[in-house]
Each structure stands twice: as C-alpha cells, then as structure tokens.
Length: 419
Image 1 (cartoon, one colour):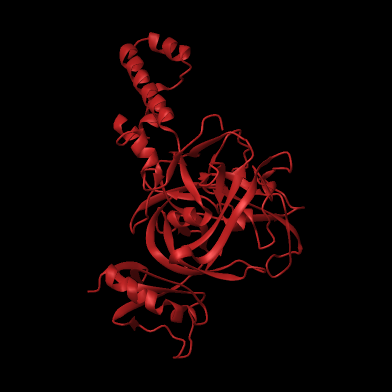
Image 2: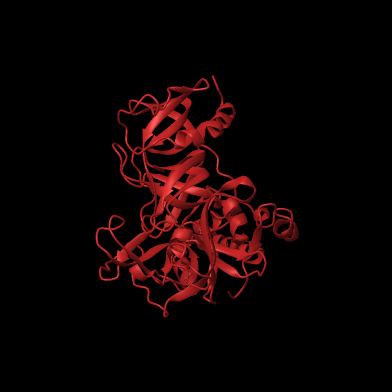
C-alpha cells in the first residue's frame, strides 16, 4: 500500500491538471471517506463544487498512477464579516480592549462599494476580522498586528498607511477614535518566494497602544511550529471565539474566490483543519479571518483565512484553512513575538509564592484574609492558569536567555516592555 510520502509527489504532479477541470475547487492527500465513514485508506482527494454527471473527459479518474482518488463536494471562501454601513448590529465579541493581543476584533476604516451578485444589496460595506497575534518587524523592530490581506487590505486598492480600528467598524469601532494602527504590508499569492506555500496575510504597525504577545483564552505565545497530520489545534477568533480542531492535511491546494478586483486565487500547500467535536464541530465563521492556529504547546502553526461553504452533510465552517506560519512570516518580513524571559520568570515565582501561601494556611480561616491582602480571590485557579504555561522553570530559558532568544531557529523575539 502506498505511503503518504509516496502519494504527495503524485498529487503535486497531477494537481494542476485536476484543478483545470470545471468545478474542481481543491486537491490534497488524506484518508478516503466511503458511506460517511473514514476508511483509513490514503487517497488523492479532489474537492468539487457539485457532484454531478459529467463527460468521460471531465470525470475524475478512480485512480491516478495506482493511487485511489476520493471526490468530495466542498467549496471554500475567505472568512471576513461585512455589513452595509446602514445595517450595524450586535456581534459576538465586539469588545474594545485596552491592551492589544490575539483573538480580538479589528477592521479597516475604509469601506468598499459592492453590488450583486457579490452581495444581496448594492451599497458601501465595511469589514471586520481578527487580530491573529503580535509580531515584530524584522527591519525596524516595531510591534505589528498580524491578520489577513482580505481583512486589512480588502482589495488591490489598499495603500500603506490605511487605518485599522479595534474593534472593527461593524463591531462599533469608530474612526479615528478607535484607530490602533496603520497597514504596512499585505500579500495575497498562490505561492510565495522560493516556492513557499501561498499566503493571505497583512501586518499593521501599532500606533502606541499597549500590547501583549498573547492570545485571548489561550495565553502567551510560546513560538512557532510546523503543523502535522492529526495534530490537535485551536484558534481564538472574533466570531466563534475559542474553537478546537484536528489537522487533516498539510498539502492542500485550494481555489478561493476573492471577488471583483482579485478574482480566484489558487493557494498551494495549505493546512486543512476539521473542527471538533466531530462530525460537525465548527472551526471558524465570517469574522474569524486573521486568527492564528496554535498547537497544544501554544506554538503558532498557521494563519486562518478560509473555510467551507455549507454542503450536504457538512455545515458551513466545519473545515478551516490556514497558511503555514513560516511562509506568512517570511512573506511579510516579520518575526513571532513571545513574552520576554523576565516576565515569564516573574509569573513562575508568583505561582510558587501562591502555592506556599495556600499550603501554610490550607483549611484555615486566615487563608481568606491572606488572599484578600494579596488581592487574590481564587488562588487555585490563578495557580492553575500560571502553571499551564510551563511545566518546569528551565522552560523559561531553554539553555539560557541568550541562546533562547538570539539563536532560536524559529525566529522568536521578545516583547518590549511598556509597549
């Protein structure tokens, strides 16, 4: 039986020919589904807009070079949220946060005039997505917000300096009052320099607002990693907030319709994620675009930008698609931001201090007074929250601060104090 390594080169060899067939929306390698059940058999999976009778010439072959195929009805779309300027309404997390971190609502101040069939009613539309995480410009060291091209730049009419608000305008943000930064770079491409995977990304220079190298509901960013099949992941987005998923493919080539001005873009070597709990756990919806996808160690593996349309047996948003984070960082010339070592050490020492207080006064009335003195209402929860970020003190440095921060191969940089 062919292995995953055997099949991937065959998929790459034939994917352009398959994608050229009418109605094909994507190609990847994964397990074959039969009768709604996962057979466990590896196959070249071909996604189509609609399963229907076609001519023999257009029909997807049952095998390609001895590798079985699986035809799946599924289409993909970018996942910002948009509203007409006259139709504002309440959203899921429209909070204005004093300190910027990943997982919150952001959006451009400018609007786009859209007409049917892109939208039901012609008019000026404003857009909103998610601040994925904080990154740092390689050249200047400036702190930046990472999100998608289609969230911050919208279309090819963008310019450097376009203003971005938190929360986004559809979520009640106003311009210039809530402007938090200016657009610096934006990339949308099927492949990037050096044959790297496709990217839908943008970075926004922060205008002095306080920020943290962390993600709401997840915690401090620990660095970056490479996604692998079967990896458990999660993301925090403006709309569906914290969701879980499992990586199903790391080599997906999909066609994403970006509308007038940009058109269809075929993005190569993307990460496909299925939301959990299965069968129909939603991973992301409109407004979640720009979220970063992280593994169980809080390492960023991807930048979420698209999901599936509703299909028979598959509700909207069950499948999420993400750019590999290494390609995103390279294309935008930025590095991942993590909290500096001093802050991590202070957190660890705080946890140890709390544990000593708890042991000393456990079961005694004096514990309440001690906690009130230290302004801690629930010591157990606070210890648990801090402890989950690292197992041992040595994880703070991993060979010493200099080695960890200056020689780290993943391109991690420290957060700067006071920013």
